[in-house]
Length: 253
Image (cartoon, rainbow, N blue to C red; front, side, top):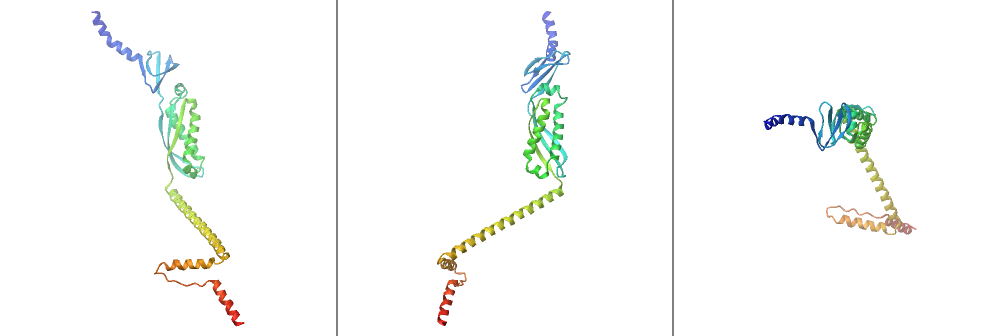
């Protein structure tokens, strides 16, 4: 008879154990309340929670990735854009995450949106496009400082897409093309200047070195004669013409 009665109480005992024992996983921490008062943080394992008198809220301490939705913002140079981002953070202090903020997940999303709009308003579009990583780090630092009282550690913020108006895209494309053409003209002008300087230096050397012009003439004739299809034009050096003129003047005298 006693065995029968014990067997009949077994389901009741199982139900009581299920209601009393709570499991905290390795990646969680349990915030314990007794009669509404905070009484500690429980680590991984089975934890005894007395119904009615006690309660426990489990908090996931793994890194979370929150997708910040598209935000409309105006840059410092008054250009409207749409921008979105991803924020990576984790709970570093479980007690603060439960006691200091009502819903830290929602609060982090709202703070990221506000901080991102403010950061965009403090920079120009060119700086935003060229220094995206630096601006992301700046946003991350601001959010990390603001969320520290909540027991939240911000690991990084990544700006994903920066969408600008279509007409502005065409303007930027034309500006980039004009900049490339300007650089090409500058590079060509520098090349012409360097070539002219080298030619002037070469001419000075040839003029001062005795017989250098004759050697240069012979070399040019040799280069022309290497190809049978070329038409060779014989050029008389100025020195030879001056010598002939000098002889003619002597004959006249």
